[in-house]
Length: 284
Image (cartoon, rainbow, N blue to C red):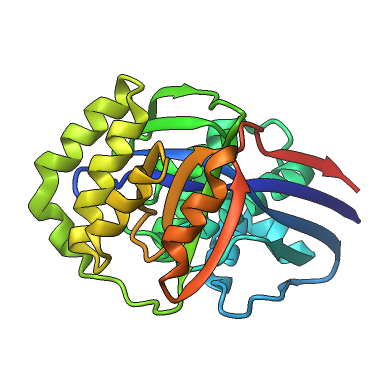
């Protein structure tokens, strides 16, 4: 009998990685708590208020950490509580897979490194088809917090640093969940590559804004929204991930101005602080 709880946070995109396999992300405070409890018996049992959540992703992640024998010999109860809306580009699946991997490792493989835990979640995301690229960029910001610029093919963090603490992300969750055609992102590969080069030099907001205009144009959002957000004090604004959420990063004092831009659109707004804290795990 053992029980562990892991907490992993969400993130927003600065540079979308689909076109070039190179991405950049920033951690936000919205979080996922995963509790793993083992007892004699067999089978994986999942409790989560979000039923649409991929049980395939959770099962795959557990299989990445545990041996076949360990899976045969333990009943595993998974309890998930997530503040991150799923399916909007706010990295819920990266946060969930990392949290599950971290809690399982605490019980079964305490010697695993951060990178091994992170890669278990990334590989599970790829294999369960939750992510096209495995989302190494997303996983890094969920796991480590702060800014992360990554090469997803090589699974390398090229650049990372903590973000200023006086920033918030104002996130618009549209009522209409339609996304554009992701394949079209490849048309602007050079634009995304340019944005990534800026992020690598820590020019995060320029990178995010170029990414915002490019993704909005391709993924069914209105690029004018990005311009309006910048006009009202956003440092950076972009479709997050493959959308349809739009995130504007700004100083706390601009919160109401940014919310006004979103108020003419149909949907909800979530405000989250930026997160620099690494994922945490402890035994219960």
